[in-house]
Length: 610
Ligand code: SF4
Image 1 (cartoon, rainbow, N blue to C red):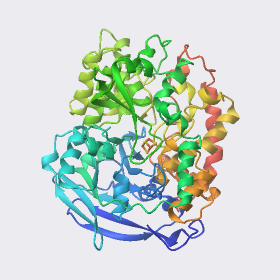
Image 2 (cartoon, rainbow, N blue to C red; image 1 turned 60 degrees about the horizontal axis):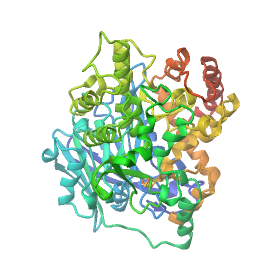
Image 3 (spheres, protein in one colour; image 1 turned 30 degrees about the vertical axis):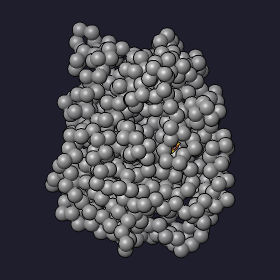
Image 4 (tube, protein in one colour; image 1 turned 120 degrees about the horizontal axis):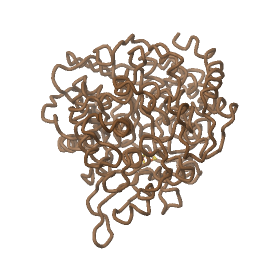
C-alpha cells in the first residue's frame, strides 16, 4: 500500500493499494494501483472485497463471473502482533438463501502466508474466470515490483493439503503457501472445502500444522476455478521495531484481552479449549447434535484427561506471543512429545467430540487430522455429521448412509473420509440441503445456510445477524455464559453496537484473539505505530459498521427473507432442558429482538452501495 496522507479517514483516496487480477481462462495477469474509496477499503479484508462482490450479479457460485478475492488487511505483515491474516472472499457455494442464490462470504486465517503476500508488494488478488487445466499461482517480489505467473498443478492433485504445501516448499524457498485438499478438488460433491495456509512451524518441522480459512467453502471455490494452490514468495520485510510498537505488542500479551487464549504456563486460560469447562458448568456444551445430555462423559475431553495419554504443547503462529494453539502429540515413554497428531481447539474438539458422542481424545484428534488433511471446514463437517447421527438415532429402522449414530467412532471416521474424498455429497453439501431433502429441518443446526459453531443456539439469538459464520461475525456467542445478559435491551444493544464490531478484525489484518473491541485505543495506536496513519477510534468503528451493514444488505440482495433470520426450530419447539443458564430465547423474544434490530439497521443500510 502507498500512503500520500496521514489522515485516511478524511482522505481515503490518498491511500492506494496494489491489485493483481489473474484471468484464469486465458492466463492474462494485470497489476494496477487503486485509490481507496472509503476507510473500509483502507482497512482491507472483507471491507474491500464485499464492495467488489456487490457489483457482480452472481446467481450461482460455480460460474466464471464469481470472482475469488484474496486479500490482506492494513496491519497484515506489520510488526503488530497477530498481524498475519489473509482473507478469501466470493459468493459461497455453501451458504445460500432459500431462493437458491449464493451469499457473499469471506473466510480468514492466520499462518504466515498473508504476510508473505503483502511483502511481494501485492495487497489483493482477484481470480477471475476458471482455468481449463489445474494450475497454481505464484506471486513474488521482483526487482521491479511484484511479479505473478500461473503454473501447471497436475503433480499436486490428490495430495493432502499438507503434502501439497510440502511439495511446493521444495521449489520455493522463502515462500509461504495456500492450498486446497482433496475435498476442494471434488468441489461438486464437497461445498465445504477449506483453504490451508502454511505456518512457519509447519515448514520448519514438516508437521501438518496448517491454519485454515474454512468457512463458506472458499476451498471449493478454488477447486471450481482449477486453482490448486497459491505461492507467495518474498524475503521477510519487517521494519525495525520502534518503542511505540513494543508498547502495542506488550499490550497484546499483557493487556488482558488475549489472556484467556494464552497458555496455562503463561498464566492464561489455555486457548479456546478452556471454553469446554466454562460451558460445562452450565451444561451448555453441545453434545449429540447440540443438546446437552448432562455431560456425564464430557470430562474425557477435559485437558487434564487428555494429558494423561497425549502430550499437549502450546504453540503459535509466527512471532505471536498469544500462543493460542494447543497441539497434540503422542506421548513418549518419558512423557515428552512424540509424533504430532492434530490441533486441539474448542470448535474441532467439540464438534468432532462431544457433539458426536465421542469422548476419547485420541479418536477426536484423528478425526480432526483427517478433516484437516482433506481440507474441509471443521465446523460445517462436524455439524452436518452430527445431524446424520441424530437422524439415524431418531429413525433406527430407516437410517441413512452407513447407519452411524452417536459414539460410533469407526463409522464417523468412514463418513469423514467419504465426504472428503467426494463420495458422500449428502454430507458434503452441508446440513441445510441435507435436512431439506430429508424433510426434517428442525434439528439441523444452521442459520442462513451456514452450520453453527460449538455454542448452543439456545444461548445466542445473535446468530441470526451473523453475516459470515455464527461466532466469527457476531460477537455475542458467550454473552449469556460470561455476562448473564438475557434482557431485550441488552441483546438489541449487543447486536447493533459491540457485537457487529467483531468483523473489524476481518478487515484490519489482526487476529480476534487479541480479545479487545475494535473501537479500543489499542487499535488506534497499532495503526499509528505500524503505518504512521492517524485514524480515530470513531472513524474505525464507523467504517466497520458500514462494512458489516453492507454484508447484511448483500444478504438481502441475494434473496434472504425475514423468516431466514432465525434459529433452528428445535430451540423453540423442544428447548434443551439440561442447560442451567436462563431460558430466554422464545419465538416471541426473537421476533421482538429482530424488529428492533432491523429498525436500527435499515435506515443506515440505504445507499451503502451507491
Ligand atoms: S492469536 Fe493464535 S491464531 Fe492468532 S496469530 Fe497468535 S497464535 Fe496465531
